[in-house]
Amino acid sequence: MNGQDTNALVPKALEPPISTAGLSTIKALDSSSDGASKFATAFREEISSNHKESFDRLALELKTPRLNKVRHHLWLAGRPTAARPLQRQKLLGRSILVTESPDEHLVWFEDCIFIKPLPGFLLDWDSWNNHLCPDRELYEAACGLLLSYAWLVRHKSDLNAAKEAGLLAKEIEWLDWVEFIDAFLTKIDCETLRGVNKRYEYGLSVSQCDDELRTTLEATIKQELLPDEKPTLGFSTTIVPSCYDNENKRVALVNFHDKVPVFLLELVTNPSEIWQIEMGDTDITFDCHFRGMTQLYTPKLETPVTADIVAITGLDGHAYGSWRGKGNPGRMWLRDFLSRDLPCCRTMIYGYNSKLSSHGIDKIIDYSRGLREELKKVRDTEESRQRPLFFIAHSFGGIILAHCLNQARQTNEDDDLTISAVHRATYGMLLFAIPHKGIAIDGIQKMLGGQEDHSRIGLLEQIKKGSDILAQSLADFKNVVRDRKVVSFYETGQTRQVELNSESSRYARTGEFVTVVDTDSAILQLPDHLEEKIPLTADHSMIVKFDSTDDQGYTSARDKLRKFEQDAPSVVATRFRT
Image 1: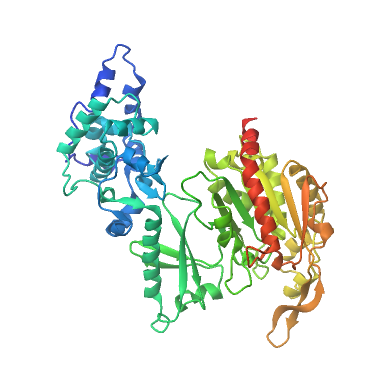
Image 2: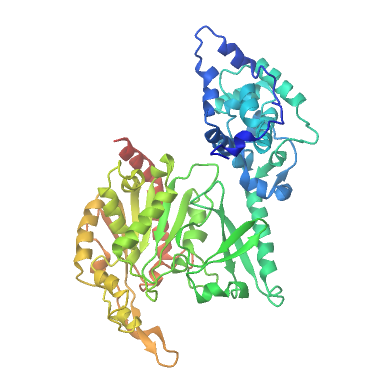
């Protein structure tokens, strides 16, 4: 096409659904004496003169790809009726939460409703004629968004509420709005909503949207089961936001109660692999390694997220399983308990290739870089960068954290805005049995079969007792956390050493009892007003596994996190102002 944008060649077949005058207020302001009213020109500046940029911008502003995929199932998640007027929404006790995502527009949850401000270009005939009418999908999405405002703003009190919430420009007058909407409604088939994106037929409940998605996923999983598995194999599914793309993606946490189905057995044999199946026109990816960041529950929607919590597991651990209790229900306290006790936090686990049996060549610096990279992805907006940050680390996870924060403190804002902000945003941390001064590696070397050339030997040399790398990192870390809240938990229970079972040819903890991380190594030796030191009657593995909300370890961790959540906002905000 000789480099031309094909979208520019689409013939215009639709007509603007508004009068040629657009909104009278705009016309009046355009002819005002100053000739440069900010309101009169601002909406035209919303669309670039470059066609490709205009199309991309309009698609972002108007299209609802996630909801379009499930449009035939939206009746499960909402009512096919006009949205209630704004004043009525307020009488129902719903707070108006402004969103810039068209997918979230008119989505409600308990006592709040998300509403997208009306883009100014939808009030302008030229914008419709030149940019929206040539593309039917954009046109229908724009009609739907404008129609929703015909529903939301039916009375003068609704217009005042819209202005107060920043949904409509303050310059718009009531009579001008009535004239504009009346002209629009004469051009729309309000009975069949033909020419309007079907997504706007429904006001959607967040919980019902997730319920519908969960129902569809569970049906898809059941289709993959063998005939003899279907009556007996039970599983539960929870839908949570993606911490990487909350607007367009969801993550499902699936728990198979007794055994893993045959179609996913490959993930048991090769835990680092993934398995994909089709769900409609979407590929669903299963994994059991939990690499990267995984959000564990949905924070309360009616209030802002108060803090990010990131939990980092230890060497040879599992991002999810290492925090899961050994009791019959198998409670995972970061998910099952904190979702009730800290419902306004975004709680995430961080997974990485920590398996000693793998042939990875990662060193401490590599793991630290990996953590920093994932933090950049999940804290990439100004609001999230300045959100208070709490860390929970177990064993080697604390070594990774220390190196990460040391590097964050040395990072210049001009070089990496997000990572430099990590140090300022970090308010407190819970450190469980961190081997700051190293650990005895004899047992680990046994697990490697005594191979002197094993790829993991280099890492073991870095974390053994007396390691120069750990000594330097510890010295730097003590300086980094002197004005942060540090709680160090140390183990008072012992752990059996690893021995080779001659019958199974597998290693198991059947040897003598030893203390994996002694107290001297697990605490930073800072003054008590800088570091709280808490003993827990547990071995090195069980120190982060809590079966009950009454567990002493859990109540201590919960209370510290609650205190962090209470005190952090003002402290962190001050750091970013200075």
